[in-house]
Length: 257
Image 1: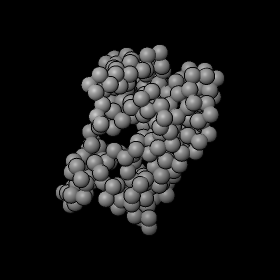
Image 2: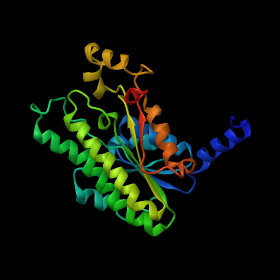
Image 3: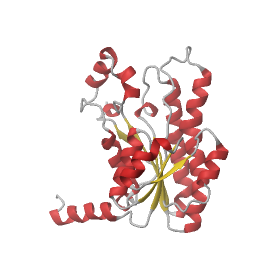
Image 4: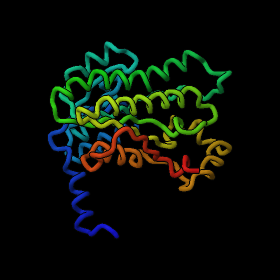
C-alpha cells in the first residue's frame, strides 16, 4: 500500500512549517554542512542561532539567512557556558568539528588526538550540558542532532583520532537520548560519508584512496552538504517525533556491506 498524494503533501507541509517559533542553535555554521543546515532551517521557518569561532566567519551566512551569529570556542568550557547557558532554545545541531590528521595508531600525534576529542566529543557534550537546562525549563520538549560520521561505524585507514571522537559522540547521543526522553527532548546523530570539501580533498581526492572507496559504496558518489543537512532537518522536525537515540548513516550504503 502506498501513501496517497494528499498524505504525502501533508507530511511535507508539516515538515516545512513545523519550526515556526522554535529557536535552534547550529554550531560549526561557518562550515559546509553547518551552513547548509542553517539555510534549510531558516527556509523552514526556524529562528536560527549560527555559531562558529569568529563572528567574521558568519557574516555572509547571517546576511543571507537572517540567522543570529554567535561566537564561542568549542575547546573552552567557559566560552561555551557563557555563550550557551540560558539561551531559550528548542533545538541544537552539534556540527562543529575538527578533522585532525591521517595517521595510524602507532604514528598518531597524541596532542592532535586530544584536540580532536576535545572539539568533536567534549565540545558537543558541553554544548548539550549548557543548552539542556533552559530547554527543560521551557517545558516544550525539543530535539538535538549530533553530526557524527561513518568513521564511527566502520574502521577507516588513518582515522584513529577522528573515528574515535565520533564513536564517543555516538555514545553521547545514545546516553543523552536515554536521560532526556522524560523531558520529551529527542537526541539523534547523523553519520555521513565524505563530503568532498577542500579539507577532505587532500586525502579522499587522491585516486588511489577515493577510487577504491567509491567502488565499495553502492551509490558510488560523495555526499553533498545538502544530502546531510536534509536528514538533520528531518530529525529535528515533528515528523521524526518517535525517533531518538538513533545513528543515521548517510553514506550511500557503505556501512551496509
